[in-house]
Length: 359
Ligand SMILES: [Zn+2]
Image (cartoon, rainbow, N blue to C red; front, side, top):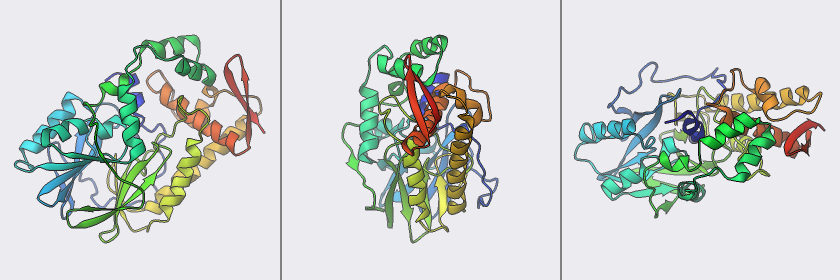
């Protein structure tokens, strides 16, 4: 996987954030390669390996009557496929995966969903927007980076060399990270109850990291399957995208934080990356506070007009190289756009470049 492909996954948070107040009930114990660790009766946790700093995505295997339901899959890479074969031929030998649930559209979560569904003639469960996004992005097979994307990078303040590098990486990279995606699926919706085996799971959706991210809550057993909506140690990437430049993804992310705070605080959170933890409200409070601190820092920084790229040092405690510039740009623009929407900043366009100043 190239750096740009990795950046497109969108999961590699650039900001390590406070995890004060969290407890990790499994301590140092996390599944070894090929191992399934039982979280609760009928709920097994495993790691699907992937390249890049995150190293893995968490998979869950739930009892589902005589069959199994798999949540999130890893990217379509030889390494992830081999890891699947190891558990399918090992601890899951003889079992059928009857349903595959994708929490959201990112390739590390649904990359092997098509492969699994074909292998077992399984149903795919997703929210509608997430399924549509995967179908759309994997079908958009034009070779050249579209002009709209070049203009978006220019607007953010990329120089000509950066734009040329982005253009040179080509388009259609999303489709290379996923196996052929199912063209039929079963829609899951916010608020509905999903019966999995003997358990009732309530679907709760969030937005901002991806448009209609599904999480599942078992209120009886006090468990939240959180995907990338609530991660323990990194801040999920929240990006403004070329496709919807007038949206406010950070606003949606902050609203989702408030929505998830209405869940009980005593849930065991099973995140898409990192370790299971307790401390849902502390974590949501930290994420909310850190975004608001960053918004305040950007307003303070606007003693003169600033472009998206000018804001990197105020937002990220690491240098932004070609490997992460796409994600950093999306995140910077999401913050600037939120300041604009909330009336704290004003945008001017000069020669195709966006400049923000304090309102
Ligand atoms: Zn994600």
